[in-house]
Length: 225
Length: 96
Image (cartoon, rainbow over all chains, first blue to last red; front, side, top):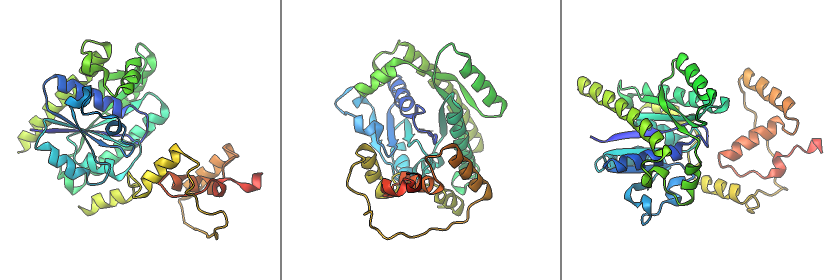
């Protein structure tokens, strides 16, 4: 059974693309068949994608239009996991991708503006959850903090406050590491080749949490069926 | 597509701002792209009722950012959606 993860937030530069490619690399290394769909009109992934390069092991497609729903459904037949990266602003394509998501990830830096946008995205997810397209199957979401500096209080404080406000967050964080910037130079997520690096450990921890969420979703789906 | 989803989508811009997106991106990359409307173009007015709170928010923003006007903010917003608007229409000539 295929699983669709959509990364969305209306704030640009929140780490969606980095997280999308790193998660894809992680699960590829775990032996899964992965498709990444670049739904960001800037095409950050597809523009740097080289099928002959290290990322060539992962299938990358582009669809920044509202046809994204059909593209997701089509790819579900061939891939274990589909990761959709969306544009850094509220737009119709991101909404259509979210309607087709099994899990929505809302990346956010630990700054007021980013958090505000993450909460706005949560509002959109909530609205979309009540559409007939979801047929009583609300979109499961998790917020995740990105570009946090390890060992600082701010991320912990922001996380705690968001949890107190009732938002669902992953415990794992995508820490601010130079390797992510280096990875953009050769369009290769750092954990694709260096599976024991600190960055790879961060991503693995996030992926483990997502897998647990996936298990819960699949169990509840089976119960409903 | 359901009416509810359609209604949500209608409140959001196109990701690619229709055919203007590639233009908008190329403008961002090369702001001197000669794609701007003529300065001699005839001017027109748009009058739109907006929530009172939004109007107040705009007023506060303009006070805090003297280089902006309500008009410049609206035009900038339209430009981010891919509409072609020359800088000269956005600049507040009264403050020069």
